[in-house]
Length: 114
Image 1: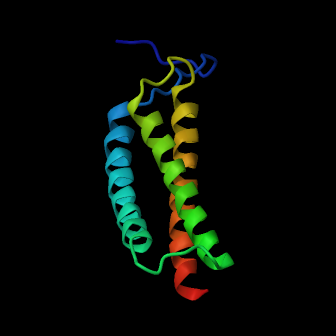
Image 2 (image 1 turned 120 degrees about the horizontal axis):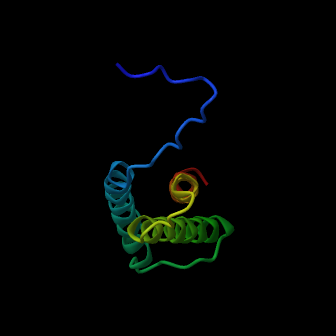
């Protein structure tokens, strides 16, 4: 029989299983970047493409900033996380990913209403 665990012992730190986070986020980034690059590719190859109005510039630079955030998140997901504070590293990566998605989609959404 084992002795009951005392309430005075510190709990073991939670470990982060990387495979549970890495695969889905890399897949999501790839899909979102594919759509975003497709949108920008169709838009900038139009014969009358010019960034003359403020809404066009805002849409274009918002999409580019969103793409940059998604690329940073992808790089962070594919590199080896630091041995210390892995959970904080991936939480920050998720924040960068979320910012990239929000910037990109808000920019595209804005292009339809402005």
